[in-house]
Every structure is written in C-alpha cells, then in structure tokens.
Image (cartoon, rainbow, N blue to C red; front, top):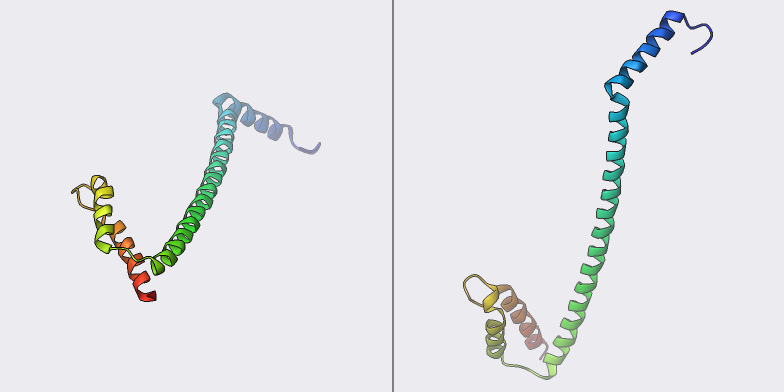
Length: 121
C-alpha cells in the first residue's frame, strides 16, 4: 500500500486479512502446503524404489539370458532326454499350479531351449 491509498481501503484490506485469519484460512493453506510437500517426498521415494526395482529386473534378465546361453552351448554337446526334463518340471512345479499339473510356461521354455539345441546339432 502506498501513502496515497485511501484509509477506507486500508481498513477494508485489514478487515479481510483479519477475517481470513479468524476463519483459519491461512492455517488451512499451511496444512495444505505441508501435505503437498509430504506427497512430493513420497512420490520421490516411489520413483527411487521403482528405479531400483527396474535395475534389479534388468540384472535378473541378464542373468537368465547368460544362463540360457551357457545351457544352449552345453546342450549342443550333451543332449538330454526331453521326457526326463518334462518329468522333472512336473515334479518341481505341480504344487505351484491350482490343478496340480506342470506349469505350462516352464514347459514351454524348456521345450524352446531343447528345440534350439536340436537345431544346432
């Protein structure tokens, strides 16, 4: 406010500020600011956890690919019985499925690995 502001306007502004203070408006704004600050911090924490999870997933995928590569080379020189593999999958995964059967995803992956070894031979 300048020195040229009429006294009535200054009083009206002061009254408005007092009314806002009395109504708790400024306290609500402060609480809102605190809540938004906490939300921003939580979002940063979630982003950090997501990034870490992504890095761990990439590491796991790299390990799986490396193991598949090693296994494929081994299968080229040491063929194994596909029926024995399927029987082992049945024993190892039958409790992890609702119907007590072998996990079809595990079976498909094993078949894929075995068929890749046959193509090379």
